[in-house]
Amino acid sequence: MQDEVESKTLTLIVSGTKFTGRLFKAAIMKYLAHLKEQKMQKQREKGAEVKPQGRQTVKQLIGQNQGVSNLEITDPSIKAFERVARKYGVDYAVKKDRSCSPPKYLVFFKARDADALTSAFTEYTQKKVRKASRPSVLAKLNQFKELVKNAVVDRTKRKELER
Image 1 (tube, rainbow, N blue to C red):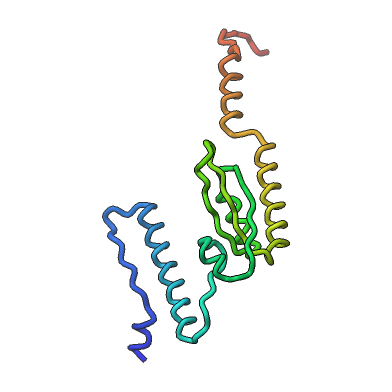
Image 2: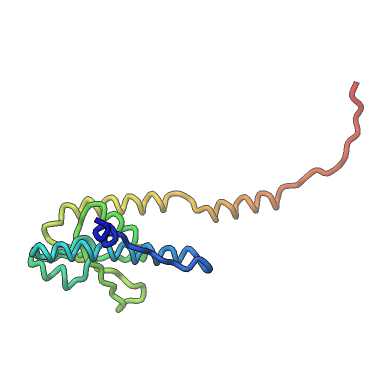
């Protein structure tokens, strides 16, 4: 019983003297990678073929023999698309094309995921349009700074008697 408990526990040791946010993030990422590796190990033991899901390499995507299509994104904020694609469960691969001056991204996906990818792209574009339509916080701050700078403050003292 004790051996079983000990084998299932994972000890995560981090030096507490220089504990920063980056160190905490790195520790969590290593823990998640460990969990993913355990899950894949269990699948291998069962004899089932390990099939990657979500973001993967182009080679892994082509190796699944289900046909591959691609789309081109020129927007550098590809992370927002990755969040939406993960939400819709799309298997995809991102390849950065550096041949042009603003780099463009090629998003490869399975042909059978076309409908899910279409809905993911519509949500992604809606997010981008919403974000572009609202003014930035820095622009608002600069506008208020100008208002304060141009405002004239009346600093004369007035003495009045109240009766």
